[in-house]
Length: 289
Image: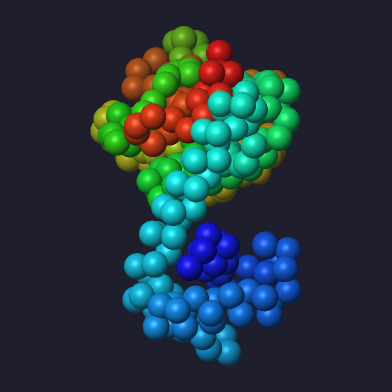
């Protein structure tokens, strides 16, 4: 058994099939199939159930893939340590992030590329729950995400920023009472058509938590998973939306209102698995200011 065989099995499991894994690995499908069959013969058991419509892991495959991931990570860490001693980093680092969260990530990535041009960076954008799971599984090395206190457990964290959320409306929508008293209430938003983000989004999680704390029920008129779509709905006065001020500032033609009480808020964190950081992760971690 060698690392290449493990890499191929993991690719098939991740891609959900031999053809997709071959594309990912830039080889022909027969090479992928042959590698998997050879390993299955060596192990004495199939790793995949193959049908005309799908490829699924067998119980043996379910046990093998996490161990193979760990072995591949260990091999990569060994190479990184040697590269670090030589003063250069190569290989790959996978960084997770969410829509609406940037926190200077582009500056840190540019600085890392200038310092270590041989290091390949992959960016994975997903919901916060998916990124947290990927950190546990080792398929994401570090992430820039919004996490509450409970979600931070079991991770090494560093606070990058924190902010309150605001109510965003079209300039033509009359929220005079909110403006005259110096801010909106969550009850004001609950009485209006509300543009919400999908469950699993950190913004949605924070907004739900704030409404619960205020004891206010609210219906959702629109549910989207895209910030630009939310802004377009608001711009056309189809509803109002609650979002972090840093995101609302990207749409200067819209009107924002602060909340007087129970304002939703979020914290942007730099996170990674616990323990000593691999050299590539440590290098990128340093570039965040």
